[in-house]
Image (cartoon, rainbow, N blue to C red; front, side, top):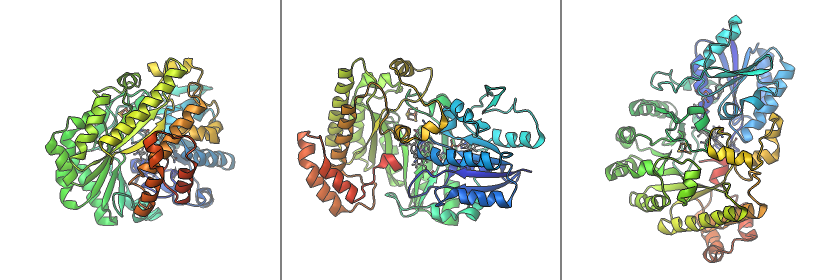
Length: 499
Ligand code: B12
Ligand code: SF4
């Protein structure tokens, strides 16, 4: 039996969510090995806590989950310190960052093994190999270095989520009370974060899910989700759910079944979907999910331009016209659509890139005209190395390169890249980034998000009045006054801290 320390680096300034990644990894070794959980979202200085565990125990394996952006910061600094202070401890990283960037991760010298995709089967096997000195050769979903070369083991498909062990909430509760994770959000006063499916059946070329799950999707049954939610609610509380799935609504049948089960529980919920998928849902299904508590849905609208949708490999049947019509359709069911747009894709010329940004801005205003309750989230396009896509080839040929050293990923410039704020892409000129950001500021001023619950109706009204002339006339340059008000009232942009 080994002793493992599982670490969830800080990912949000406030509002910690149930750390599902680390919890699912814990489930895979529960009652087979000893483990401790340290959550960076719950600690002022997680390294102090980690050192304390190391001083009192012989920690054989340090397991860290890492998504790009701020989570990398603690992952890098803590892993580096562990390597230098406790060189005998094996360091394993899993999650979206190392799965997408294994080379830079393993070349750092302070990560021994990368878990590429789901860790449920490989992690216990890896621990067994560490314990017995066995070979890593037959363990699926892992990447490691052997004689200076990267060894990329066979990749399993997505596991049946109904067969996996239950998440050890009771164990988590010993480290951090689960009720402290049930934060206040727009949805409710005690919000449960739940993850019910892996992957996504689509293959958009800009999405970090695609290289890992290759267009596959598998989900836990509606009954299984319902039972888990009931368990959390009965034991720790909860009146709202954020579904953290990449694409919760893939199956209308599962959504309808879940809605029928949850409708009497008085829970409000939210999840992510595709417009073309949900546009195929029957009216009765949309009415049912609203009645069952689904108040808001996040959609990747991306752009109003069909040629750009094609360039993104958006797949499915989504078109600009559908994006617009669906915003109107869903309004009838009193569900708020959260539409995310990706601006600043590469184009044939500087003029073409700039023109597309103008068209997208005009399209967003059209959507707001059709359904003013639509929440708009704007990302600046940041390339993901999906090596086989056409878009990837276009990006590389335009001179774009990713950092070669792990520490470079945590420099402020690359952190902004990860947060999709300033992507450093050669085809996007500073004036274009300014245009996108200034429009976003004016848009957020004229239509403040409903998801920032600290932002009072009074503040919203003032901000709206102040931003109205700029929004209506299309003059977005230097919106200093709006920015000052947003800063003073600490307006919270949903795309930075999420949800
Ligand atoms: C919750 C979440 C957040 C929360 C984090 C809350 C928290 N408690 O920490 C918030 C909202 C803060 C957030 C923010 C961001 N996120 Co985020 N986030 C997610 C989300 C929706 C769920 C993660 C999760 O819990 N999954 C459930 C678990 C069970 O699955 P898993 O993590 O894949 O874990 C399995 C394996 O990966 C592996 N594994 C994972 N870790 C480990 C560790 C070890 C030791 C082992 C052995 C195995 C292992 O085993 C697990 C079980 O099989 C994912 C999408 C998704 N559906 O996964 C995006 C996602 C990870 N986020 C993403 C991004 C880009 C971000 C941001 C950087 C940018 C943005 N604007 O969204 C920001 C900034 C992050 C920050 N501040 O650090 C991307 C990453 C894409 C990529 N290119 O790599 C994703 C995939 C969303 C997307 N579709 O774009 N995020
Ligand atoms: S539909 Fe969404 S989750 Fe699925 S591949 Fe496209 S962007 Fe990624």
